[in-house]
View (cartoon, rainbow, N blue to C red):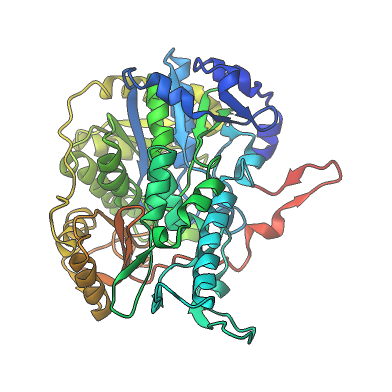
Length: 554
């Protein structure tokens, strides 16, 4: 069997200028990065502002297994399937982070016959967007410490800005800096986030244009003085230099699927520790360029979809016309208590118990957010006809359509059924509601998401979290939306509580104010904003062969 990278290499790609022509983008509005990648100039969106938006299809999922359930694969399959039935479709996806590529999960460009390409480039350095975000983040960190070194005119008493790197490195979670012993240097404890958890990533993804980007960067809170008053980036005059570093990163990237469907890939915050959606700029541009836009939100619907709807849609003034919940037989068994080593084996009891996880995601999207929903079963070779029939029967009882998607093996042909069903579904009426009102207190917002979406009985707060919430509301930021950082493996904040039976609480250990991005990060359970590597990282199998070809990326 061919690997994903071998399948990608065996496919002849179209020149990116030809892909752009399908969207009526002229070559003069592209900044090409070789033959198969390009950035789209800002003028394209400006020229299309008066055009009617296409239909927006959001792809989310049940709570995943450690290797994921194929949201990106399904997203690509749907976009290719829509093209197969004659619809003008376009993808709007997130950029992969190097952390998972070299960690446990591998790449994030789809799989089999449904991939975005060139897959090696997209999974690695791509067009340098994430590197630019890393540089802007760390420039700010160095400017803060330089300011303190030269007299601390702003009176920093506490620095809250962290450094970042786009790799999984648990050793950097807490570090001591400024230990050189130089005169006037001030040693202090510091921390690193993975770049995709940086507030700058969120700012890039939520900015409307470069001027809005500069404004949001200037509004970032970086510390407090002795009186407890906040200090912002604009007081350091750092926003200009940071904007310069991000001037190209803010432009969306254009690539293609293996079937030459246009794909805009831009921005990549994690959904378990950030807001988990591609950029507002990319999504809004795609809505002008295509009749059907397929986008995704990270991890399970309790994380990515909730943040897509409560944060991104609210800020961007958009909403999905339908939602696809991706499920796999193996993930349903996993959440039915079947050990991950045995989830590929037939286990009816595990399937019957685990389907509750899928039901809850359906209920959240359909009945609580009020959106049209369909379940996409990402088929694996070990799935039996009996298992598939059981799942279809159970969903029919709930009044929810199931579509068997075989994109991995068949490409767009394997997604024609769901494409046809989505065309019909996107024309049905919706009654979309946010999960909370911005005027709610921060605690009320947290409790509404925790009880309504996660199914928790109560929310417990550490003393530190209570104090931070009080401070945030006193500073006048109580009307920000919330971005809850928790495990992706469970509705609860415990990654081992897969079945979520009985009562459970959500524990908020701290909150962080993100005044540039315009939301409050709520740290639940033991979630870390700097992941670690597994015992056997994917990096150990990645290499370059004698022909100069990269091997080992999957």
